[in-house]
Image 1 (cartoon, rainbow, N blue to C red):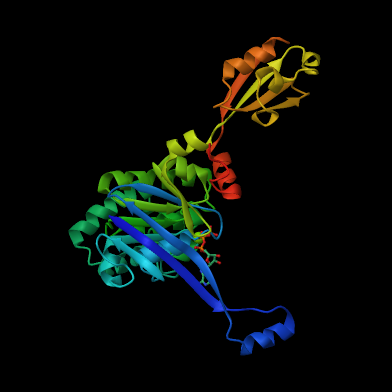
Image 2 (image 1 turned 90 degrees about the vertical axis):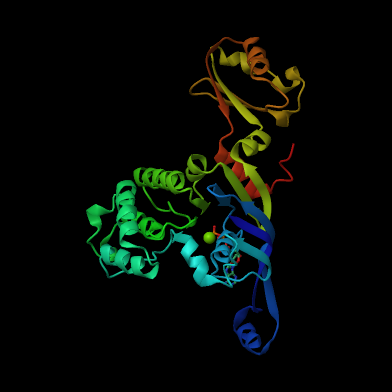
Length: 340
Ligand SMILES: Nc1ncnc2c1ncn2[C@@H]1O[C@H](COP(=O)(O)OP(=O)(O)OP(=O)(O)O)[C@@H](O)[C@H]1O
Ligand SMILES: [Mg+2]
């Protein structure tokens, strides 16, 4: 459905100099700075996939989405969506795609929502029959009817987002681009939006590309994620593989009976690993000893046994690294440092 081949996007802007003098110098200078926002990215997305496109602020996500939707033309490389080049064949492309930018609405601010939908019906040439069927479905999953007659400017953020999603889907696009669709929403509305996206994907086989900073969106929706960093693709694969490969830390928390016995315990030494691979933390208030270790180097029973050798353990809890932690680590240090 989507083929992105070696696309890059450079933004060229005049070079800025500091201070007032600099501002004047800048006026007469021809020097330019080139920002490589997207740097040689390739991937293919199949029909009906939901892909999370993630990366830290300024990584180049929105720029890629803008090239895929045809708003921006790539500096290099090519992008094909349903065999159409989005920036060259914008009209044909528009029939195939739906776009929601969480940060701003695509609807007519002063018009009742119902009129926005009527206008979109005309723009996209949706037949009366299709309109009826589609509206029934969208009303069902997005519950638009409670505010359908109100002007868009009077809607709450959550209602506005549901309206925007509905509007993007009215012409039943093959591809849906969502740029931070749950930003600023409360937990219940977030959940509803995610359910709606899932239902739409299942019913119409809509391909969904989603950028988000919300780990919940990724865990709930995406079987595949693409991570970009400074304009370059650094990961493309399943969520499970990412967790498996990079979530190598485990944490075992044990409530111990005689904390004083832990004083002289050199756990890493006892288990024959370096301190970095077996970190101990003690919470005095709750008598809770937490050990964080590399799951490829140690096993839970080994750690437990070593502690139980010195004191009795009353309670135990085992945690895997959370996806949020893995992603934070990748944003901070990239993948190379993390690789096992
Ligand atoms: N029109 C533009 N002119 C110059 N530089 C731009 C332009 N648009 C984006 N950039 C720069 O390109 C880089 C990538 O921006 P982009 O908006 O794609 O990031 P993003 O991954 O969507 O970030 P965020 O998570 O903050 O939305 C940034 O350094 C940004 O400042
Ligand atoms: Mg962005």
